[in-house]
Image 1 (cartoon, rainbow over the protein chains, first blue to last red):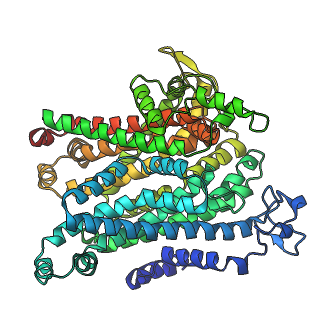
Image 2 (image 1 turned 30 degrees about the horizontal axis):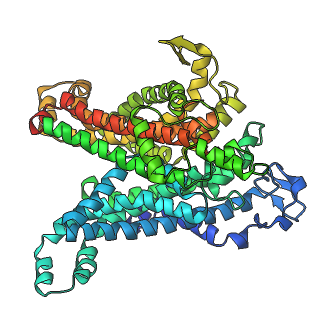
Image 3 (image 1 turned 180 degrees about the vertical axis):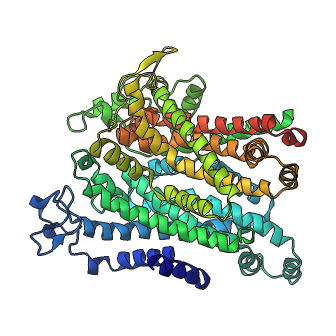
Length: 289
Length: 323
C-alpha cells in the first residue's frame, strides 16, 4: 500500500514539475530561513550555552528547559540548533556564490562570443586553464591566496565556478551570433551592449540554467570541504562543514553524534540538490526520454 | 602530428607558468613567515631584519619570483621553515604514500565502475539501471570528508575491523617503503582507499553507462546480435573497446583528481602523504613546502592529462589520422 502511494506520488510529481527531492530542498531552505524561530538555542550566543553540558548524548534534558534532541558538541552547543544555523550559512554561501558565478560566467561567455578576437581568446584561455585543473585544487589555491572568512570563501567559489558557465554559454552564443536575427540587430545599428544583453543573452542562457542546480551542489560540497579543512568559514560561526569538523576529534572517543548529524544534514542537502539537478537535466535532454 | 605534440606541450607549459605566478603571489600574501624563525614577542628589530635577509624576503617580489622559477627548474624549492629540509625532497619523501593510496583506490574504482556501468547500460531504464543511477547520485553527494569519518566510525570504532588512521608497518621495495607489502599495511590502506574510490566508482559507472547506451544503438552491435554472438561477448569484445577512450580519459583525469582529493582523505586518516603535508604546511605558513606541493600536484595533473591525450593514439586508430 505504502509503495503504491509512493509510486503514484513519484509519477504525478514527475508531471507537475514538483518532485520529492525538490520538496526536500524547499524544506531545507525553509528550515534555514526560519532557523532562529525553530532552534531552541542560539549557538552563537555564549549566554545561552551551558558549558558543563558539553558532549551530552542525544535526548539529554538540558538546563535551558529543552531536550538536546541530537546531543551537544564539545562546547555545549545544541547540535540541532547548530545544524539549523549552519544550514543557513552553507545555503547562503552556496546560493550567493552560484548566483554570482552564473552572472559573471554567462556575461563573460556572451561577451567573448560576440566580440571575438583577442578578448575572446583571453577569456577562453583563462577558462581552459581553470577547467584543466581539479576544482578542489583551484579552490585550495584561491583560498590560500585570499585567506579565511565568509566573503573570501564566496569569492573563492565564484572563482572556481564561473569558468564552467563561461564555456557553456560561449558555445551556444557562438552559434546564435551567426543567426540572421543578430544580423538584423546589427543592421539596425543597435548599441553593442543592447545587442549582447537584450538579444544574444536571452537566447544563449538555457544551458547555463541547467548547470545551476549541479553547480549549487558542488558549491555546498566545496564550501563544506574547505570549512572542514579549517580554510573556510570561521569556527565560531560554523557552517555544516565546520560543524562536522568540530566533532572529528570526539568521533574517536565514541561521541559520534557531534559529527554524524551535521554530516547527515549536509549529505541530505547535497543529495536533494543533485537529484533535482538530475531531473532538470533529464527533462531538458530530449535524448534521455 | 609533431606540431600537435609541440602545441600540446607548449599549452601545458604555459598552463604551469601561469599557475606558478598565481601560486607565488598567493603564498606571498599569506602571513609573515619570519615569525616562524624568531619569537614575535621577544625578537629585536635586528633579529627580524636578520631573519628576513636569511629567508631572502628583503628582495623585491619579482626578484623572489624569478629566483623561485630558476629554482623550480633545478628542483630546488628552498628549505622548509619548519623541518629544515629541502622542500622538494620533503614532497618526494611523502609521494610514495599518496601514490600508493591513489593507485589502490583506482584499482578498486575502475573495475567496479566499468562493470556497474556496463550492467546499467545494457539494462537501460530497467530496475537495475535505475538503482545504479540513483546510487551513483547518492555516492556523488556524500562529501568525501564525511564519508571518511563514517568509514572510520563503522569500520574502525564500531566493528574494530580496521585501524582508524596512520600508515602502520611498511615493507621496503625498490628502496622505498610501501604499505601493501605487509598484511597490517593493507588493513591500514583499506579505509582511506575506499573513501577515495567510492565517488570515482559512481563517476566511472555513469560515464560507462552512457557510452554503452550510445554504442548499443549503433549498427555494428546490431550486426553482432544478428550474427548470434552472445550478449556477453558483444559487451566485452565489441562495446567495451569502443567506449574505452572516454573511460581512459576519466580514469586519467580522476587519478589526478585523486592526488588533489587526497588532501582531504589523508588529513582525516592521518595518512602521511603529500595532501596532509600541504594542509599542515598551509597551517604552519611553511611557504616553500606549500609552493613545492602545489607545483608538484599541478605538474602531475597536467602531465597526466597530456599522457592521456597521447594514449588515445594507441587506443583509437581514428585519432591517428585526424592528428
